[in-house]
Image (cartoon, rainbow, N blue to C red; front, top):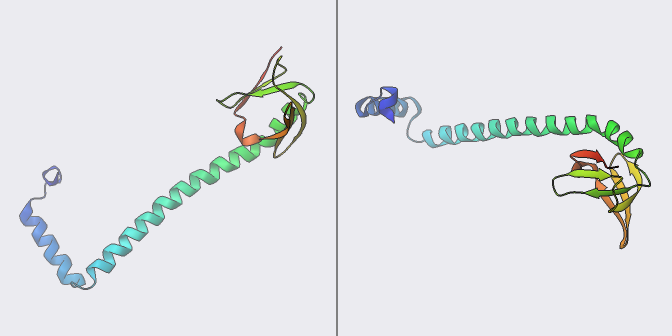
Amino acid sequence: MLAMFGVNTGELLVIALIILLLFGATRIPSVLGGLGRGLREFKRGLSGADEAAARKDATAQVPGLVEELRAGVGKQVRLLPDGTLEVGGAQGATMVEVDASGLVVREDQGVARIPLQAVKRIIQVR
């Protein structure tokens, strides 16, 4: 792998010796530890930015999704495993209420809540 960068063993030893002279044997572990912490924070920051953008996109879609679902109040709904919500089919639970956090459905066993995050797309069944 080192040959890929054009660095041989002798050059590595010279680089290691220079680093040892610059930082000293006692400071090298703390410098490398700081470098590792910095890389972990950088990766955590990148993934945090991605999660924040996804949350912002989901929040922006909520009002339109709520309005689309309000048309189905009183109809039969069924949430499929892939996140598809079938509205108006012959089987399923009856949609009772819709708000920004989810929809309330009435089943034979009682009342349940389906969070809007679980709904990936909506299909109107005739």
